[in-house]
Length: 284
Image 1 (cartoon, rainbow, N blue to C red):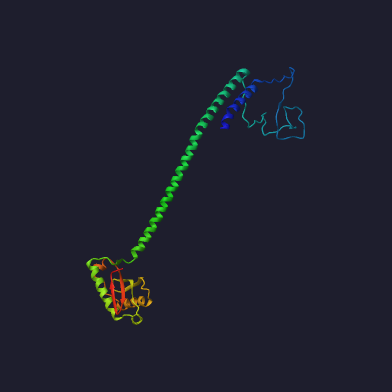
Image 2: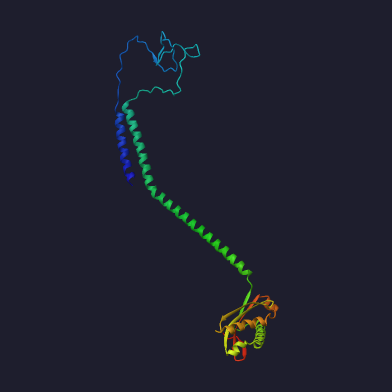
């Protein structure tokens, strides 16, 4: 804002100063010259001779008696452009015209300065808009990269999930007939083996209790894992349950109806060791 206010004042001062200079004229007094005074041109030469010429054709900065490569009396020309003689004009008319030209130039400069002052906020606004647009593009690019990263992570996790075995968890809730039949046969086998292999140490010491156990079975009937979900509080009973599963396996392979849907059945049941008895129930 400060530069825009100073500019018109500076230009106005400059106009007045130049107009004043144009109105000032200088005249050099003409030296008296005789009627028969010889005229000699003054030239610069790029060579010199040891002898002084008897009759000089021109004035030079050094002696040069003859020279050049032609017999014709020629004079070297300058590479500088020829300045034509100016026609005499009235000094007042010239000054007025130059002042008018300066005024027109100042008017154009002031108009240009005003236009620049008006367009400056627009230019700044355009820069801000461009900056905001660049920021939005950057944010959008970052979001696209983040989405691509998440998609790659999801695809990787999905591929890993696809490689996992299809697992069916069977708890206390009622299941369809095909699963209920397989689980019932599995329970009967566990109870038969468990009754035959009741832990003698527990019977002798009078230790009784129950635990929650999950047995995971593969399609071929082999045991994948035995996990105690809730301990009986007695290590002898927990170890006896593991031992009974090991002795009862392998179990029957899955029927086609189950094998077509799952690779592993995880059966969770409550195992109870009472006085001289062993049973499995669905209660949790």
